[in-house]
Length: 125
Image: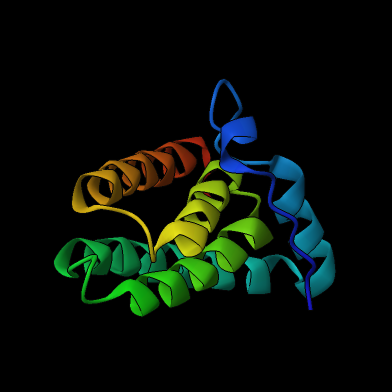
């Protein structure tokens, strides 16, 4: 399995690229170009759905679900080198129990922006 390390969000959010291009190259070496492309396509589909799901959940009623989903997102984003998204998912995972609704919505806005930035930086193929 792939090892993923995620820097704290505050270290990667300002001025850093949304993705590390070396992460995808590593994945290609591990599973091949076709496999990496297929897994990445699944990642985009699942991440879009997960971000939409976050918007439908109540922070107070679904703290454990936020943490669980954020953990999965953090791991997947890290595998592909989407550093900003992974860092924000880590922040959500660690703070799901304590975030107030306003803070949660602000974090989800940042996650949506990080997702969009990663997609924009993603080469076609």
